[in-house]
Length: 136
Figure: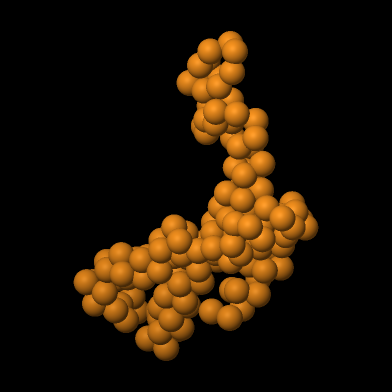
């Protein structure tokens, strides 16, 4: 995704007002990109994978049940269970998306090599998605 980073400078606040993220000085850009960018990429990758996993697990059980029920349309789950499934199982991905930190700040900033996982799409790619889906 493309984001706009506004840096407050001599020209005033025009860049900051029209940006997605605003920082006061160029020295904060490294922390924004390498630390928060890396954490955000890893968190979003995990949230996407977990969300697909839990929903495929639900749909596959319904599909298999329907095959044994001769495609009669009878529901396996009560309507309250179906309605509450994403509400109750949505909390773990939400918490992972908010609080997951695999490496501490100092490690990420001192070793720029760890940032390559995002540049090379190591946390979210078609192979990893297929692996998670096969586990469902």
